[in-house]
Image (cartoon, rainbow, N blue to C red; front, side):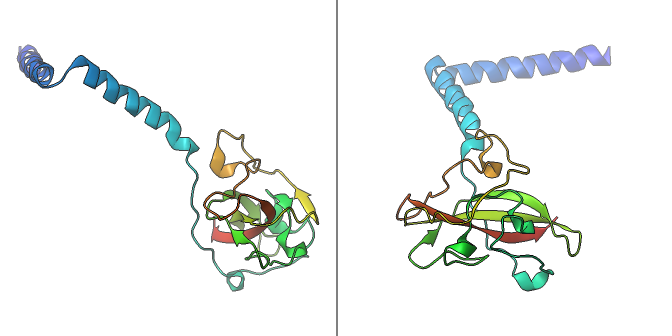
Length: 174
């Protein structure tokens, strides 16, 4: 008996709320808002992700040649290494600027055995460097999952969309 009473109260409340909503809105506005919500929710995963500044290299042990594609940080790299093009592990060569939008990967440091999240940053503003091409796709995701796809030109938010090289910056320990 108590259950039926609760259902009656709930039914009455929903009925009153529906009538109030119907008086205050039109079908077109509801459909328009619902459509905007659906389209917006579909586009949300496509938005680029801005990455914060990384931890300094003094926070963890290093080993290997940063000019070699086999270097541990480059496990998800796809591009020309900035270390061969006048840049460093953390910065772009002179005359280029880093894109504020990046892709990420997780690489294991062979020295301490820990997993690190690596931010791969494209340097933009000059034509391709053309030296030390590195195309390792460990953990790469399809283009429709942008934060972990290395097949996208990431020169968004820069003066020029011309790609030059990429560097790998450690952002955090997993």
